[in-house]
Image 1: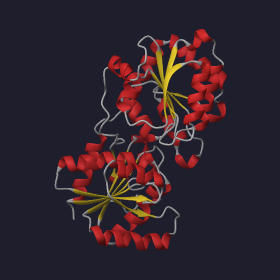
Image 2: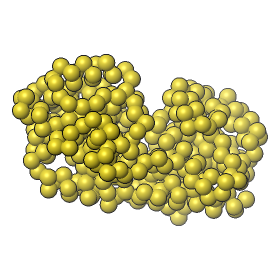
Image 3: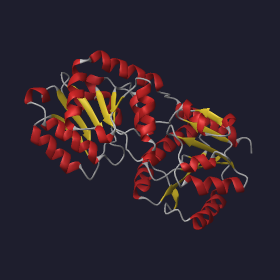
Image 4: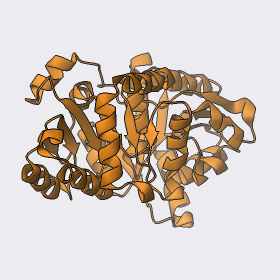
Length: 352
């Protein structure tokens, strides 16, 4: 089976696509998977690191030239099915595939679908969603199936003691993971550092941090942690996420679909600070988690160092609340989402 996957412009689209590709090969090692990404450096960095060759579609939204490129790519690979993971890159590829009579499947990672998937849902043979509540946004509800959000296949739960030792961290301290998506989040980084400055030496002694700063903030965050003398590790980017999650007691994060899916997989309590741009739909993801008691949500406009300090100190004392948040997050997790999506793709490809 020849499968073409269109996913680009953000890790939130690309990582679930890669996880699905792995499961497709696992189902049948004769399956051939081809990737189409955008021309952004992020796409190239991720796909090359994963060992995938790929073609690109412009992310400048030049519809005519992008459709010409899409038809050319489809003639080159002659796939049995085209799969889109949202974002602009999916649109010309799957629309052109439909015109050519090729089966199509889309997957929506967020609670509220983006524009590309809203349009493509009208022509797709199957619509996979991460959240059951997403079904209401699509007209062709009979084609919608809850899949969950595919997470990275190399994620495994490790013994906490072992994970802490790998980062030279103490068992007796409360470990906070700070992350802001694949490129970091300066706003979160800044507030966390201000929060630590506002704590007394005795209060800071309760905590240790694993801080994924993003490339641009690496020096800034490193200096910040050093200046307050808090124990921890700072990484611009870390590919040891199984160890990172397994070592953590709490996550402070944006509310991208991949992040909350991974947090749920590891059964961790979290403080979610959704990126406020409505186009990325993180606020809706966060509200979904909050309504089910699976996360504490703070809108960016409300997040101050004083407020975050209060929440952190309260959580350290309230282990019962932490346990409940963790259990609710775990209950929302669909760990076999990549396998389910791979089977849905194969089922629809076989219709040709």
